[in-house]
Image (cartoon, rainbow, N blue to C red; front, side, top):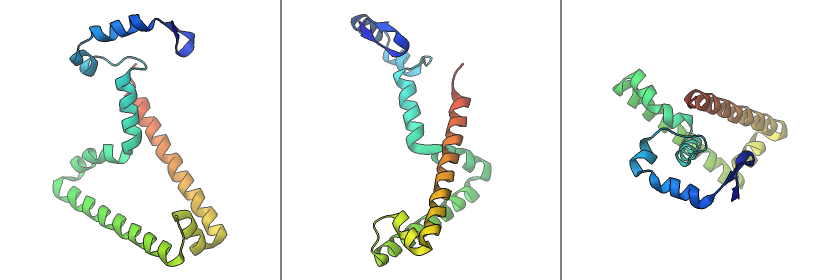
Length: 139
């Protein structure tokens, strides 16, 4: 017997026999159970991809194909230009990372403010992720 979550004990050979009884279709398309492998994979996938890429189809549907593609192209162009500026600044100042480069440019207090802004941004992203996950959990 194996010890599981919440003190439950499982008989592994019996558990494996139950797993083998289900067809591939049932495992992929059947109802998701608490702690299922599929649920864990989907959760990790959402965490890795982020809310931005998952909301892209919705944004394009709201804006329309032409305006949506133009907005996406403009966003990609600005992102590339910003990244290129950061790399050039880092190379010119001989700094290894983003935080070091910005602290060198903005000073110690500017670097602290930048770290606070990045922390708030990350916390906001986590809150949006939890709200999305809470709305998608089956009851």
